[in-house]
Structure formats: C-alpha cells, structure tokens
Image (cartoon, rainbow, N blue to C red; front, side):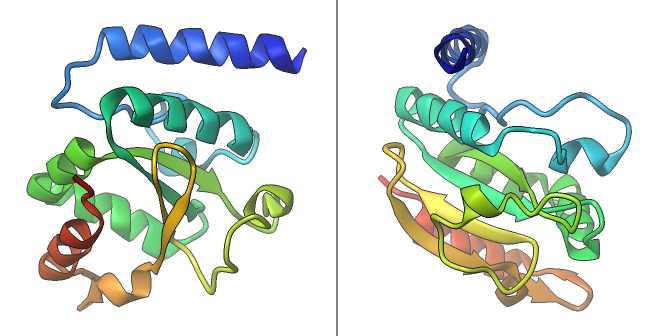
Length: 165
C-alpha cells in the first residue's frame, strides 16, 4: 500500500511539474479552501508531503522550505498575510524553494515526523532542506518579526542566506 501511495505521489509531482513553469514553485499539495485551515491540515501525511516536496525540489533545482505551524497560531496567519501583501517576498520564495507546510497543534503534533529535526520553540518555524533532504537550517520566525508583522528587510536577509546556488 505504501508503495502505491509513493507511486501516486511521484506521478502527481511529475504531472504538476509538467504543468508548472520554472518561474513558479510547487507548493506541495494543500486542499483548496477559502479558509486558512487548509494551510496546516492535521490529517495530512507529513512524510508523503515532504517526499513530494523533495522530488519537486530535485527536478526544479531548489531547496525545500518546510514551515511548521497551525491555524491556531496567530503568527502563522500573520505570516500568510505578510506573504500575500508582499508579492516581492512571495515571488522570491517561489523562485528559490519548494514550500511544504507541516501541521503542528495539540490535535496533531506530528511528533514522530518532527522528532528527526531540532526541537522548535514556537510556530511558525522554518526548516531549510537541500533537495536530497539534508537539513541545512532551522529558523525561528520570531527573528523575522517587526511591529506586529514581519520585516521585509529580515525576510530579504533570510532569503539571501538560504537561497542556494
């Protein structure tokens, strides 16, 4: 059954990549919704989502930006608003990373999955991975905050630091 799921995910990634131009990043599948709840779905399989993100990153020659958070998290929702309001940041992220969101809440902490990464102090939290899955960075987003939102300058510095080749 797991092999079948992996095969379906690989086919999905290949089809999405075939329909995705190089200037757009694949945001690993989240169900469509009018509500932010779809961004951090507690029922998603983080292993499968990361596998799909790594496959896409390999093909697109990008890194993976893994965002750990939840809809209960005000700063996670602030991050989404910031990215909507700052298309220059969003476009840089899309050019450099494949983004995958990992749900974290009292309902589902995804403990087994997240145990392979450094402990996080809060959400949202960024993990930066090479396309082969190697962890190269762990970033608390509190360092990117400014005046009740996020700092454009801090995000630009973050992107320069982790942009890769």
